[in-house]
Image (cartoon, rainbow over the protein chains, first blue to last red):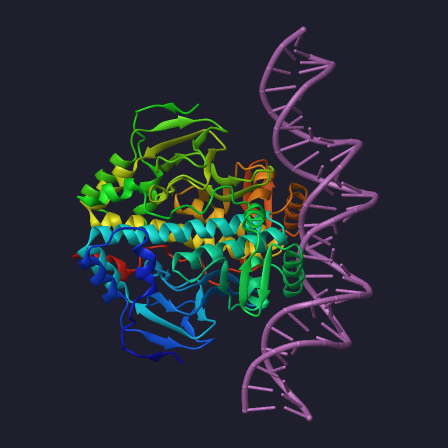
Length: 255
Length: 255
DNA sequence: CGGACTGTTGATCAAGGTCAACCTCTGTGG
DNA sequence: CCACAGAGGTTGACCTTGATCAACAGTCCG
């Protein structure tokens, strides 16, 4: 069961992430801090949002990992995305009648339940933060489209390269990857359900990537040995980019 | 080449769609009509939005069909979605530095190019329309997640059932499907690129669906013979629902 | 020490891909 | 009016990727 704990986090990951995208005023930072409280705790397998829940809440993840997934009636499961610190997940959930996917912790996590009214208030107080939310959601959409291409048209090797590349780049965005190394607390079962493969094939394919000196693993510690070949496999033509808000957007919302 | 034509459409599909979701005031209807002008025309294979374009435009489709797709360097292609009348496609495109996918007409179409400033103005004039935009985007996200599950975990037969179900239900939303029948102007090549299959396998699988009396085709005219079995194949547990904005959302934005 | 969980490896199998021939429209030009 | 070309679709033969099944190994933890 999720436990509650109102002790505030010293520096929420969402702030680490957003300050890289946009220069925030002290007032905006305060607003975001308020959004990130109260902090709750949960353990692996705790369900943060249930599939089909109708309350329209979003969740903000501070520490630890979660997955967003859908389960089919015969036991098949698709993981839509890995949720990492700094992610605001399901921000438009309150627009739908019911959640179409569940969010489940896969490590110990700290998180905040964000109610619809909190998001609406945030937008009302600051149009710029509204733009930022919109931007976060656009990023999420881009990620989903990226996954879609991977599942539809890439081979097992390429799909795993995509996933590794994506996680690495997202973790860098919140300061959780140093010199090509990061923690990946997902089982191969989860990697399989995220890439549409079987566990066995994930195991074989990752071992091949390792034998080819593209990646290296020791327990949950992963290291990228050859970013170029990884990016090429992942069909990444352009570098992940600075990930700042386009000037156009800042301008439009400045007034 | 896309041609321009400022003659206004009598009743844009987007209005047909949105009036089913929400009661619109005369002023809001006028705002939406303004968004839907000027009307342009394009022919099959015309590119409405190029992959990588940096201008941040969205497009609003009035008549005809388009596809949103990504092309890989070796010729593989993934269709992310079919764009049908009433769709506002890429509304958050202007949040990204460049478009990650292209939009190409597959029939003769009429459409409107929606510039970032037009969307921002719309939101500024009416928060309710802002909510509506947000809702449209949430729907799009839900659709993408749905496709993701299909590509990741469903069989060929199930994937095609999903696609048929989805198109049927979206076309009903804009009054383009009457008594289980609708026009589907996509080649099997496109169906293959949307479902992550090969054309040959799409052909075989559709023929099997037809032999099983689930669907029926004559030229581009499709008919659903057995909605129940189709829905079951498509892993749809709940009916598509009334597709109205949740009361919660209307309340939040009323003030 | 034993059991649960995770990952590895081998053997076999099937879903779906690939290749190629052919067919059926439809539109076009002689 | 017919011949032909080209696009889209169908069918068969064969092949490949990745799934499935099963045994086993390493690790963690009580």
